[in-house]
Image 1 (cartoon, rainbow, N blue to C red):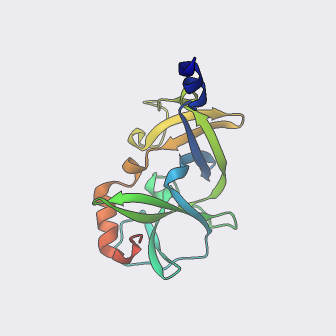
Image 2 (cartoon, rainbow, N blue to C red):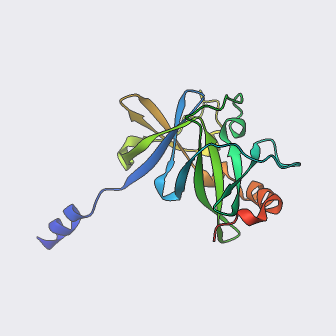
Length: 171
């Protein structure tokens, strides 16, 4: 009987995802990787940054490199609106935690998906590099493309960014 109690008290594998929009498509990232969401209030351009790096912002005295997710995914640059946000993501760089900003068109909501809700990424039919996709989940409004952050923000790219904006490392 205790086996049944233990099994029923263990939640099924689920994933909480912060969803956001880019060019009309809905994407999501594991909420555990999200530090905060900021209003977009401009940024400082830095010379010699990779194309997908839109610049840096100052957050409470710390420099945060910002990736334009549209450019990163090969989409057309979009207009900045009142809904444009920077999602501050915690990632790993050389065994240390580092923060990076992801510039998105708008943030939607946090959604919880069960493991059964998440399907493998299609091999064809998507403009996005399939290496970036953890999976896809269906909602009442359509599909959410769940991103694999370690692929989106590769070690090599993060090292290049850290060399340009070393103060961007999280404390």
